[in-house]
Image 1 (tube, rainbow, N blue to C red):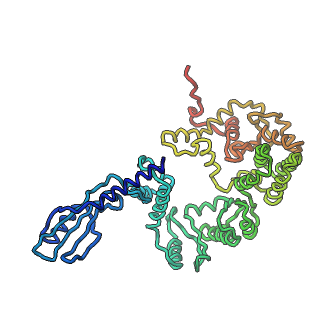
Image 2: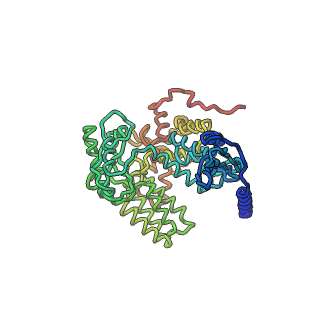
Image 3: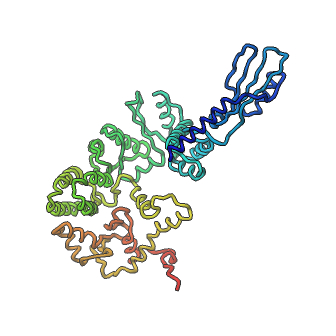
Length: 510
């Protein structure tokens, strides 16, 4: 059906084109001089495209100014200037303006291009521009080839106002211009670059004054790059030390470095920050592990994946080592998993074992900074959709209702089940505890579980909580804040709700 319709359109276009070519020129007007004729032509919305010398005169040919957009029945005008100056100049025309059907082309329509330029100036992303254009022009489809043109237009427009850099000298000069010391906190700042000699020898440190100031307040360094060479990371680490000394007059101390499994990062860390603990990003870990899921029977994978996730929640080195031993005993019962078991224990226990929460408590376990929290918001609240303001505000309120959730928990928890351990640490039950708190504490101190399933039951029965500081529940380990920590502080009057109405439930009408 689509092929037949396209053929019909083509045949119709060819018929119309044939009719256009056969149509003869008609007299439109006359003029005494060429200037007078040109003045008349300027009112016809045409442009000159050819000058022809004839035996007895000169012919100037014009066509519709928008002939590229509207090729159907193209309007044409000719000015015939005879050599005999006593003969009147004739203006001839053929066809008429027809702007009803645009030419089929891969180029974007003019209104879309104008809107595209407007959205680019507003700093919208490619995805946002596409969505905005689909709303502005719902009746104009964007085929795949035009989407490609749209992306090219976006990239061209953004590059058009960029600084012109054609040589190594230009690049060096740009870096030098951004190496100044001023008070612009959010502008591009280049604290270090080594002399650029060629395209294969470039190291430029881009940042902002506001961003680089944060290295004073954290001992965690998150690293990721496309260049996997140790020399590149070593240069980066050294320059962080130099920047800290130069701008903040203090030594840059790093206790944790979290990244993917790139050996170049590990080697550079051992040379520059030997005292730092090299952590493995949990997101990269689980992604790599899942690439080997075919080594596990299909009906067994969900259980194996759950075991690995539970293992990642271990909150101390000793707990992790005990859990690993129990997991190995459990997996030994499944001969079809031997190849996967060999891979897992060799790669993620012997070579890179520091991907569990307890490897660095209260430190992000992924290399994407606040993306763990952003992922929760997208997954549980916005559902990865762009929301209208009227929908977005209630979602924000839902995200920020920790105080109410903690207040509910503090009122419903049986305080007899809360066991004080020592200092500021307490043992609180989960929503479904299966063992007594005293038994949980005894198992924690002895760290002797019979099976991995026994370990999981123990792990999910109770949590170690320090009011307003930390908790070993999944939310506490992942997001560093939870209802247990806040609720326990409310029970002990360490934290008080300032506005009582925020904790009062509205209830239901009769």
